[in-house]
Length: 437
Image (cartoon, rainbow, N blue to C red; front, side, top):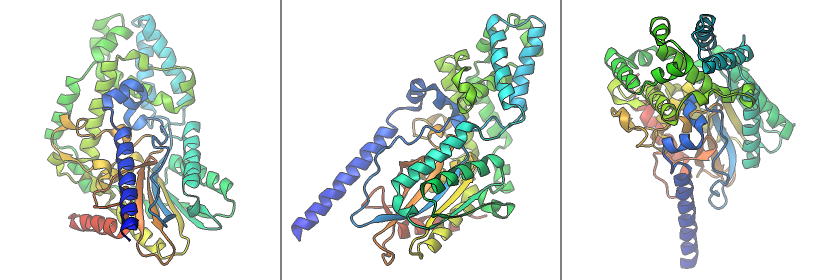
């Protein structure tokens, strides 16, 4: 008996050490180092899905096998959402060019922006071919990693928000799963009926995000890291014209957004705009964006540290549907498709990998590991994977994947990254019940 106990302890020690080493390896670099290594990381929510960094998942405890998946995913790569994101930079440069105010580089940038604008014409906010591919690949990996969940003629219940890029993301994933197992029974829907949890708009929380003090603080921070003047000097040959006719900060930010989003389009194969910015400028643009996303969707204390509760209905729904599905012999999977403005606050609400950080010190975010591009690239996803030994097994375990990588939860466990579902469920329900709506 002593030998068996010793072997079990050694096995658990090895699993824990392996998980900690893998987790540490995923994020050992600072955000600045990650951006220097791959400039696309500076794109924040415009980062094209990088795929899982963790190739081998931690083996499940003896006798436990996956039997149910609950998932919420962001749509895949898309064009910029608003028409003016393309037309304002283009027309600003085109007007200057007509007056002879552009440098040769400025004229070339006008040409490149024109190419991007033509590709996105009347497709603003729509899914790109790369976005469709991302969801097919995520679905394929989900199937291959957890084949037991998708075996036989099980049911898949899939829902999307009513936005077309989300619907098409869902359909691409389902198409891939059906190709892998034609026996699957698929139910899929996109209805305003489900928007109360799929994409809740909470006016009270939204109104609390930015008061005049917080706006002024963010604006001051953005000005501190403003590099628009150096870019104007590269693009224009007349600085008096720029001062009188050009909103330099708006143009610089617009060009950086275009540069960030090229990676999601077919134009990525033939052009870039990142060459307009130095390494320092790229990092600073990201840093300001990281802070803005934290203020709006993280537990930022000056606005009440409550913004992640915008996803309270979604988390309750995940828990309730899991409780129901766990009663079934072979429950399959529940798949949901929405937006980064759900994935980010849900990640914070769940406190995955410490993203439940509460602070008023926006300068400390990166040092404390709050890095937005690790959370919500295009096609970002959160997967709850449930394990048991058989349908009668009440000791159900769960692990969570963020962008297909194992994460830690704010719940005690002796088998990390595996947690008792009863403990996870109780922790989050108490948290939700404590929130005053």
